[in-house]
Length: 250
Image 1 (cartoon, rainbow, N blue to C red):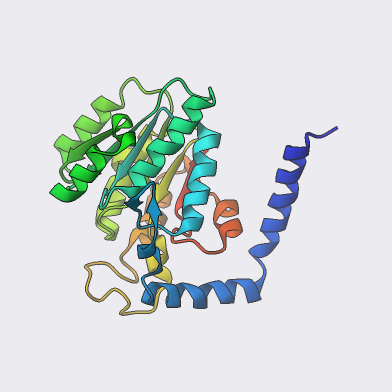
Image 2: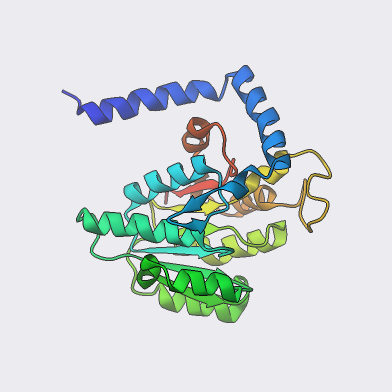
């Protein structure tokens, strides 16, 4: 007899697969995405008191992935206010409390960690599980430091959410995706930029045709160890990271 939770999971997967071919649902998502971007929807949320610039559905997915992967290290590029690394640290703390991992740590990298953000992160109860590294995530010296930090870790999860140009994200993927083990993920944020109308990000150096999603597409042409996990983004329906959930298969 199948475990009830596994049966629920199997039924969910089959249901979610149908979402991919539901044109009404996909059209509604595309329209909603445009309006949510205009409304700066992702800039309204907090995690344990710290601003977290994420779509809540993606945070739910992140929680599920962390529980599945059980990483002892999460590497995140892009710190901003710090809500994301606080979130990751708190979920690792829960895994440790549940006896699922012995220990867990988050390494956050940002080219400019603003003093007030750094102060807030360091004063947070989760700070003991966080290390911050200031510098460009694609600088060779920074990459070397990250690899040294990760040297003795057994299971690594990577989240890329810094500069969103294709060149930068592709360089991050080439540098950090190899640290991910089989069964774990490299998550690429804000791939939804490709799905916005032209001119939606005119104040930024990235936009349609030059963004994290186009970097993912280019990366997958040269690396067949990873595959886009379509089930995750399909069940979320609303996500800032379509094509951004990359699972390592070999």
